[in-house]
Image (tube, rainbow, N blue to C red; front, top):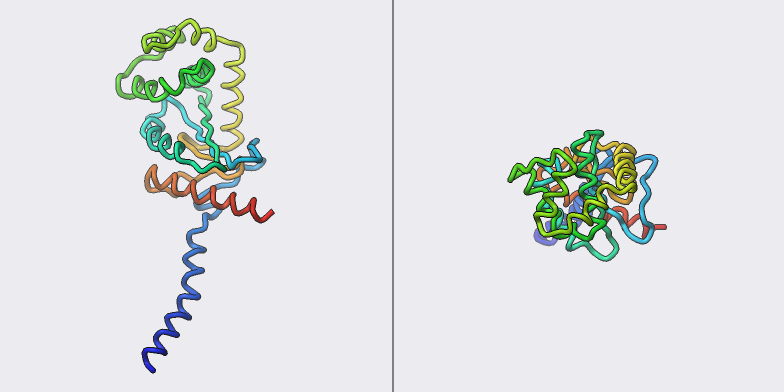
Length: 214
């Protein structure tokens, strides 16, 4: 009889404890994320995760291999996009142009990580446009093609738009992650880069559930 009472008690307690655990796991505004208002433009057919970053940021350099592995395993309903920001620093604006020019010429996949390594490990000075173009050429890419893309009229517009998006999201630094154009992940809530992505996954799950409820 005593064993039966204990079993019933345990069953009743689990009914109260399990929902509490589930509730604790739900990401909360002001804790794991902040609201972006007005929301950034975001696709409707995917849950978009945006990384605001700069090649000049050492934290972004450390984060890059980790988030790259994470992005390669995203489910089909989630997309990933990166936005290079300058915070109105001329040196970082040059690096934003570098990202967009590499993307335009199809060299991004090959040289993306190499740019971080050149800046933060090899201390390559990217102090001028010519230095960037020469470095890209030294890595086997078509320097002329890259230089034309780098100097193109559309590059400056892309850099300005990236900074506008960063300002609209009210990011405090980089790297910063935004989900669905509405949720800015709070870096201070994460204990590590891996934990930052865990929180991001939980917010993605929140958006997925919201869309199912519509």
